[in-house]
Image 1 (tube, protein in one colour):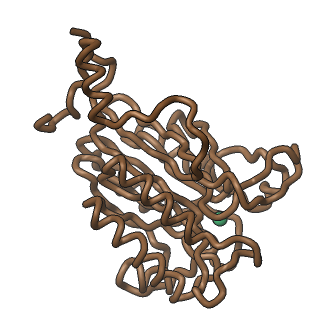
Image 2 (cartoon, helix red, strand yellow):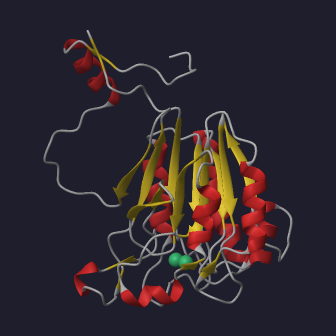
Length: 294
Ligand SMILES: [Fe+2]
Ligand SMILES: [Fe+2]
């Protein structure tokens, strides 16, 4: 009997970003793409992984309308209920704080929307990086103070920081005009803390890097994505959308890109039950998640 290198994950998170839903009476983003079917498809795919949490990292509305948030909430919460997953909403530059907080958080406010959540022993801190009326993000003195206060008390399984603006170098030059300001200061607060990963979005492309040694796992968009064949230029395209499957283990956090779409079969499909039977034949065991009953 061989034991697999890793047990099953302690926490599974469906990381969705940049849904850009609009008022249902005017649903097309820039007159081209209706993001609603992509959201439904992502939630259906995520359900197959039985996530404990669904984290949506901002630009959840494109137009900031109450009606867009009502539709978003209805779509996501009904899926989350079927999965028994907790929903964590993070706001982005396209979001309107007042409408976002009223519909999704239950208390309307124009103040920064920092939040604290728990998924079992894992803490999820949501940091509001938005500057109302602006596309770029900003880590303010106030938000750094809030974050430092939270991090002063570590969580049993560590912390995941969820925020809209990715603290990463841009890969398309124009994106420097809507990047996150104050990244070095943010890194200063994260260094030596129990933050194990940063989940973010905003650039409409999957991206990975580090900030002060903390992995940055940036999700692509469910609305439109960036065409990298333009080199340092830029073109948004109605294709390549996806979501990320985030898995939290005792010693690592992974993010797997899950592109949308159905494509021709190359390797025959196997169900989870088929895979379990095949592993048993090969005498390989995957241990249960730490602390679970198996
Ligand atoms: Fe966006
Ligand atoms: Fe954004």
